[in-house]
Amino acid sequence: MKVLVTGASGLLGSEVARLLVRQGHTVSTFQRRPSGVDGATDIRGSITDDAALRRAVEGADGVIHLAAKVSFTGRAAEFAEVNVEGTRRLVRRARAAGVRDVVFVSSPSVANSGAAIVGLGAEPADPKRAHGHYSRTKAEAELLALAADTPEFRVAAVRPHIVWGPGDTQLVERVLARASRSRLPLLDAGAALIDTTYVDNAASAIVAALHRMDYVHGRALVVSNGEPRPIGELLAGICGAGDVAAPSWTIPGAMARTAGMVVEKLWILAGRKEEPPMTRFLAEQLSTAHWFDQRVTRELLDWTPGVSLDEGLARLATYYGSGQP
Image 1 (spheres, helix red, strand yellow):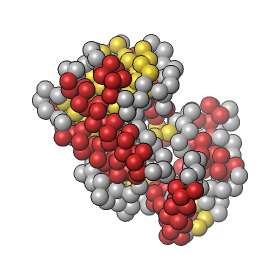
Image 2 (cartoon, one colour):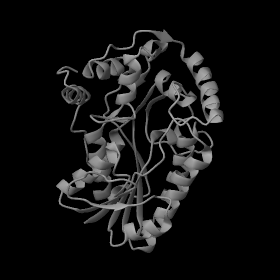
Image 3 (cartoon, helix red, strand yellow):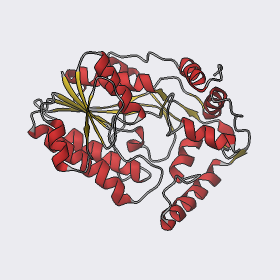
Image 4 (cartoon, helix red, strand yellow):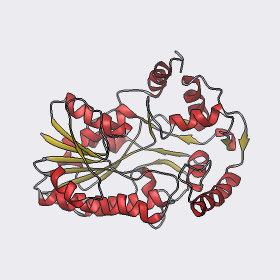
């Protein structure tokens, strides 16, 4: 099968491409910089470039779309151009090129209004209720992608929940950097129960969706390890793997959410490009429970996670050389 993977220079995209190569597929990757995936053919370009997209999808049987603007802050128009319009262009070009199957990689945040999530499945994406430019635009993109689903042009959405692993700059590196400077507080004592997804598991679930389109097209599925734990325990595990002292000071979650809203607005007004120390969305993620029922996902994908949370932390410890999770 000829498969195009967009956004393959990131942690998850590169692992998806590597898994497809190992399975014997003919793999092309599409992103602005080299993917570093042995056995795949790099096609350089931006998801905002219609001509480049047309070249990228030519001859593909399937597409896995991960390219996105991912950030806690930034201007709404920038997120919309990449996440919404980029997806619209990709879907249009893929359909015109005769692509059979598209897996849109989404996020559970598309259906999260900031309230606790306790054992739910994949609720409908809702741009009006989603918090933050990233979540809102991913919700819009998921809806337009699934709206294109037909028996001849099959589209499914997979929502991996908080993906992490060795080499992760989105979660792991930020946790370690802030903890090392004693700038990582526990919100509400780190008691919120959350689930996450080790990168290998997220990649295998996404690839499983491509193979199981007969069963999953037209649907959205949330993917996680299925091992919810208190966030304080998870952060301690990551810090232990990186040989950094775990956070020990705590602040009320409500205070952090209010402060996050103020900081985010000031960051945007100042035009700062680096990530702010706190945003409303980040405070919500650190102070509210969010874990999901995985039974439907595992049944439809005929899939189970291959790497447990503890094994993932052990691999992280090996990566950082600490030898202990």
